[in-house]
Image (cartoon, rainbow, N blue to C red; front, side):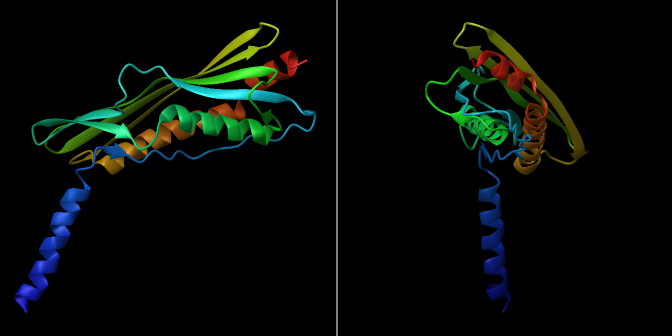
Length: 192
């Protein structure tokens, strides 16, 4: 009877240990969409993404004497390009290859600085995202969105806790993008 109980329990612990050894963070920020602008009539814009970070890691964590590099589950430039496309479509724009205004969303920085001791951990996540709007008439605007998020807790900074910190930071940036009308106003002024 003890063997019947012990073996599945041991197997569960081994599998749980394997599951926590992943070096990929599941990045899925909340996407906030802006209000639609009924005055837009068939304005087409193009959207693309770029990642300017020198290191593709989201965090580097010391675990059991080894420095572990944690990377995102998907390419951040495509994730943020998709977010910006959804936000612009929600405003009422059409997305196409040759728009009146070209938007580029740039990941300048996104990193979780993780420190941990024997009984406490600290995670500070910083995001720096830019939207560069370039109109066909030559006018250009750069809008920066920056967020910092910090959390502390007991024991160790697990992948789930680091993922939550990164997702919270990105969600805040995306909410700022949805509420900000400066890019929208630039497009309206220069899309003629």
